[in-house]
Image (cartoon, rainbow, N blue to C red; front, side, top):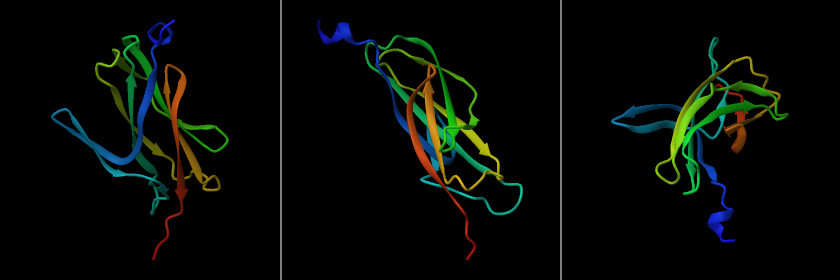
Length: 141
């Protein structure tokens, strides 16, 4: 058998990025303040606000049509702290990636004993990518 007959249509998450925010102009997305950690917000009533950008690309054998995607925020034990709504994305082989931006606003009461959060991208109920982000205390100087 050749490789074409063995491929079942691979889909990969080629980007999973956290940012402070984003904007879109003329169909182009700009992420502001790429995050490599979350800082405990100062003042009361503020939580951890950020967006997660995810990009999915399929090989030429990836079946076209509607697919389901969601983003999960979990703690170190794998307990889901927050999850995005389920989004519908469309893939058609290599003809253009599917992207989404999911906003999150985690509670300020998040327990800082667990200092590592996991961000997971699920595509059709399968985790395709995950990244860890440290949670830090904000110090006043």
